[in-house]
Length: 320
Ligand SMILES: Nc1nc2c(ncn2[C@@H]2O[C@H](COP(=O)(O)OP(=O)(O)OP(=O)(O)O)[C@@H](O)[C@H]2O)c(=O)[nH]1
Ligand SMILES: [Mg+2]
Image 1 (cartoon, helix red, strand yellow):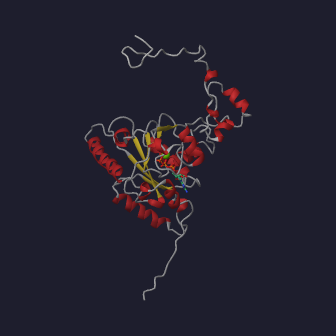
Image 2: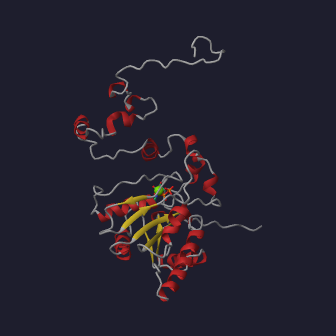
Image 3: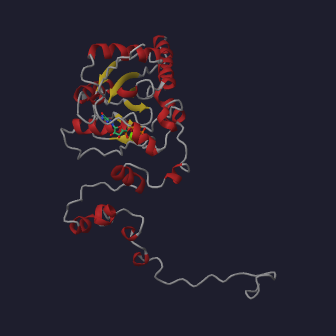
């Protein structure tokens, strides 16, 4: 062994001697000093999990209730964009049908309630056809099994049409409901227990939805919030949490919601909404390759994003 000539056999580099204090916290650079970290982080939003008392005191207790979130969620929550778009492609793909689909339709175990969330202003683009068909088939199959005395847990489907604050006020609710039921049936959702029309940002229709979900879930049911990317699942669950907690979000975790498709990356259990052993889950949105917005860049998506109530316009075309 020698350490003088790298071209000769037996060459090795002696490891440099470590500073005895290399493990001490004093050597670590505080995250707030990293140049890429946003200014709001530097202002002390991140709580020192090892010493929350000092952290709250240092910020005057002002931010003590704020949850600690990852850099991606922080960027989505405060700037409406992912921190590093190049990293997004490296994230592991979520196999929805393997991780969630199988559990939704399982004939044994806890009863499943499927909250099928659909965007009111893009019904067809945000209706999960494949998933609706899968659940409808499971309902038929499990019901037949149950009638034969076998284990047959029949999933219950609740269709939630969200973002109704963006629909024109002139729209007839009866005609719209009729249209929605028809389109849902055509899309593969054959058996629907309830249809709810809600706005998570205006708190419309949430109380009835929470009551129905509690009733359908019973004491130990599992409620799965599913739908296409950007349909409004996480925003809906945050609003339901607020509604169930009597207006305060204290007991409920705040899910990251953002106009960026693919915000939620994994299954998240939402506590504080359902009583007993019933469980409520948020899930990552499904990707609809035929939806035009999935082919647009973030800047282009911003241009077509609907944020205000749609106004019907009538044009008269002159035929010369
Ligand atoms: N106007 C209006 N906007 C809403 C409503 N619900 C959600 N949004 C907006 O829709 C966008 C997407 O909401 P999210 O809750 O992140 O959607 P998601 O389905 O969880 O999306 P993924 O996690 O990507 O699957 C956000 O910009 C929300 O502010 C609503 O009731 N009304
Ligand atoms: Mg989400």
